[in-house]
Length: 183
Image 1 (cartoon, rainbow, N blue to C red):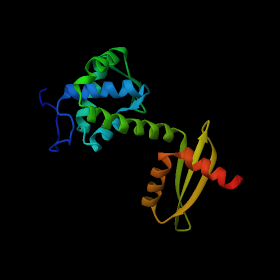
Image 2 (tube, one colour):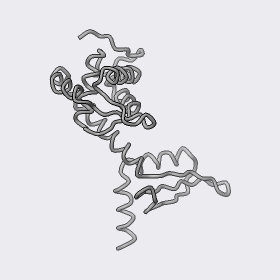
Image 3 (cartoon, rainbow, N blue to C red):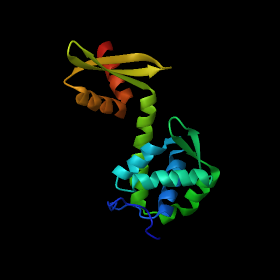
Image 4 (cartoon, rainbow, N blue to C red):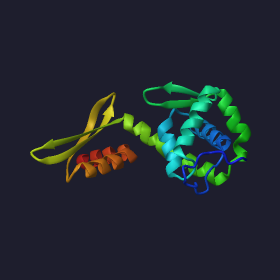
């Protein structure tokens, strides 16, 4: 395939160099996951994994929407789903992509979707009281907190690291807390 994808001066390691391949990969990922996927987050994930340039991925998402292979489901959350036309492309052309790229992209995208879902079921507040920084992490049920943990942290950077860890698996954290206090 022709190398027509913009790499922004960075050669993806084992990545994709054509817009056609990137479009096929996007269709493949959305077909495999079969859930709404945030476009910018997908672009950043593929970029950080060294698979494709994030600007190129965003352009491909826009092009796939325009041609009817993807459909926007929530403009505010920048989420997309695959259409039947996109599924057909993924099924027909998935063998044209290297297995290692598909595997890395799928794994990264699946983690991304999990974090996206977790973000909807959690809430974070960073507050400053008496010169100290606190983060409150809450697991939500119907937009109401059912478990909240308030931690004193050295600074906002540490608070953001805790938020990131909490988003990885909030169920594990809150079930661990419940188990510890009910034993």
